[in-house]
Length: 283
Image (cartoon, rainbow, N blue to C red; front, side, top):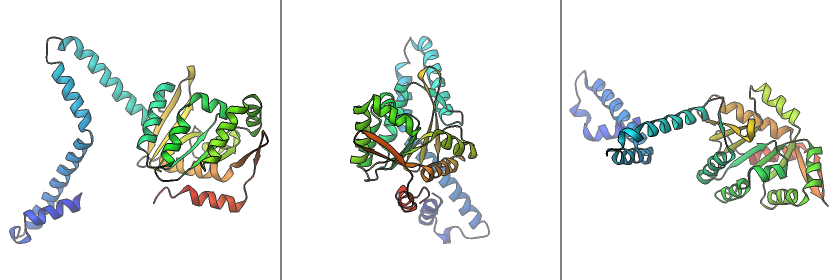
C-alpha cells in the first residue's frame, strides 16, 4: 500500500516540486495520508454489500413504522455483532447444526482447494451430523486437486463396532475417501487429548482451510456445538498448526478389507510422504 502511494505521489508531485528542507517530511506525510486513504477505500469496498444492505434498511424505515421496527433491527444487529465477536474469540460461540452447516458450507465454497480435518465421531455419526460435509469437501478438492487428510480421533475398537452395526454407512464413508485420494487416518482420543493439552488447546476436532482459517469444534449441551475461528493473524494459529502436525505424526493408517477394519502404524517413509503432501502452512 505504501509503495502504491509512493508511486502515485511521484507522479503527482515530482521531486523538483517538493524541494527544500521540508520536502522529505511533506512527502512522507503525504504517503502516510494516501496509504491510510487507500486502506479505508479497500475496507469499504470489501464491506460494500453490508453497507448497501444497511442503506436499504434505512430507506425502508424512513416511513411511519420506523420507531416500531428500529428496536428490533438494532437488537438483531447487536446479536450479530456479538455472535461474530464470540466466533473469533477463544471461547467460541454455540451453534446449532444448521448454522454450523451454513458456516462450513461457505468455508468450502470460498476455499481454494486445500482442506485438512480431524473429527471425534465414528463414520456413521459423522454422516448423520454432517450430511453435506463430504460432498462439499470433494467439490473443494477439484479446485486444486489436493485431497487432504481426515484424522478420526476415535478408538480403533469403536470403528470396528461401528462397522459391525452400520456396514453400508462405514463402507460408503471409507470408499469415498479412498476413491478420491483423501488420506483417512486414526488416532486414539487419549493421545490426541494429550497433544492438545501440551499446546494449551481444549479441542481435538478442527477443520483447516488453505492454511488460512481454522475452525475448532467442541460438542456442547443440547446437541449444539461450540465453534471458534482462528485466522493466520491469531496467536493461536501456530498452535493449531503444530497440533495437526503432531496428530498426523502419531496417527495410524486405516484399512478396510472384507468387511473388517484395521488400524496400523505407518512407516517413517509413509509419514515423510504424508508431511510432504500436507503442504507448507507458511509458504
